[in-house]
Length: 196
Image (cartoon, rainbow, N blue to C red; front, top):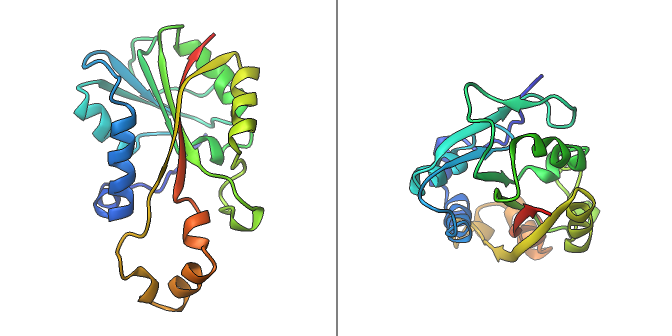
């Protein structure tokens, strides 16, 4: 069993694009009470850890393969969580519905579940490590099918890390001309979800 590698190292938070996404995510989760705990789905992400620190939440994370039954929370944990972060994970899973079903072992109706994923556009713009880049309608259907309800939804856009990105080489220039920079993971959907 291998933890999902979300490619976000501590130094990654210093890049402007990730920093912008972090700040937008922090704005979105501002409804978290400054007490309790949070479970990060998909391993220990530097973004999740930082947000948990900002909100003074005790932080836990998962281990195991999220596409199979039996993944668990790493180490000693309270058994039930007040908050859950599923940031940039859904699109990496072959079976996100199974993960949402398995999550019910650790939550109750008061648990706040924060989810984000990149906007779906065209298959040609889909990352090779993504299995599900859903539009909002398909996401809402999946959430309903899993027995959850959406409390709040929003979208954010982040742009280039640096204003001069288009002139840093041939690939960045081509990405700019073809709008690849926009369609490929610069729009994020955010949802606050709870059990029905």
